[in-house]
Image (cartoon, rainbow, N blue to C red; front, side, top):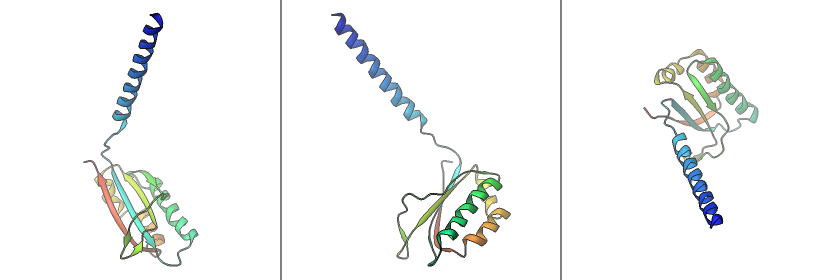
Length: 133
């Protein structure tokens, strides 16, 4: 009888622990008010690995230089789609703390300097700005 009570208690405790873990996981999924700026692109023919690295290094430098950029993502795992039949090759993401920060980015000197590296190498790109606001 004691063995049965102990088994029931253990089962109840395990079930409760699993239920709490599930609740914690659900609570962890948030809806931040920041803005993510997602860019997918293909490179011009002949663009080298070193040139691509310079573009991504420049994004990282912008992230450090510009107020309002919270995070950057630079390593593409899976890029889908094409533009006019040409397969997209790369993607990067910048997270901005606000719409004002995203707007300021367009004319910031660090962005203008980066464009001098990026634009001559970019074949085509598509940009998506996403938020929960």
